[in-house]
Amino acid sequence: MQGLVVRRLLHMAITLFVVSLVVFFMVRLRGDPISVMAPPTFSEEQVARLREAWGFDKPLLEQYVLFITKAITGDFGQSIQARRPAMELVFERLGNTYLLASAAAILGVVIALPLGILSAVKRNSLIDLISSAFASLGNAMPNFWLGLMLIIIFSVNLRILPAFGALEPAAIIMPAITLAVGTAARLSRITRSSMLEVLNQDYIRTAYSKGLSDRRVLYQHALRNALIPIVTVFGLQLGWLLGGSVIVESVFSWPGLGRLMIESINVRDITVVQAGLLWFALSFLVINFVIDLLYVYLDPRIHYR
Image (cartoon, rainbow, N blue to C red):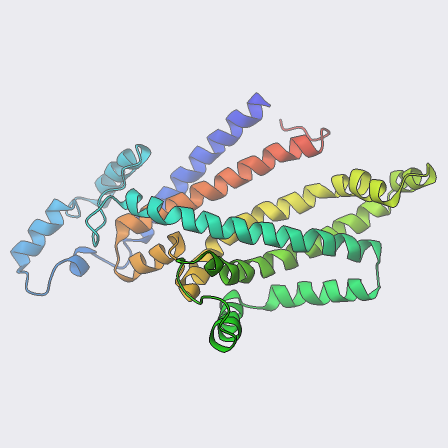
């Protein structure tokens, strides 16, 4: 187990390094961000001094070395627009994004697992047909469209839920549902297929022949052995929830990291963009790391070399 942890941490460090390279050079493809910062009344000399003050006059390689050296300590520099530390702005919004993603993940699992198990147990029945239709619809439906429809129905017409912001506890309901639908659709489909494969195994028939109850066979024997692909997809969906929150937060004006990223990209506040993207990457890597550890716990037969 210690060897697994060390190798995964090393892989995380290498991946973060590669991501930092991509992020650093990609955000500079559109040119000099000083052109956004400098007021129109600035002379060329004033623009040059501003560029020097922010370090954008140095060669790109030197800028990257300085960037990665400070980033290791958590210093991503000052926000060009807010004149505050970039990580301070990221941490202000991070809690809201994690809250929204967690609520959507829990709701997605609560919907997907029972639906997937029922459709596998009652194959080709009405519940199976409903589950398949829900999975297809949830996968095909754009989350921004679903979000707009929820706003029209529950905020504009019925006026029972707040449409924007995070000032009320109920404000999280519609964004969470918007994100959860796609997650529930994918998880229910993989739960059904994984359960069907396990239910056809000999040891399940043996468990039934010993007189074990349906509940015990399903949850103690079948579901646990079907969890590996379900956990894999769930881990991927957690990363998708963090990334998908960018659009959903914009639709609902949810004050999270995704919305901050959109705002920063629009004004080319590259220090905040870099900090936010690297934090998204770190979050995704941590999720994958936890999933790898769960594999060993769920199935002792799995060994990493």
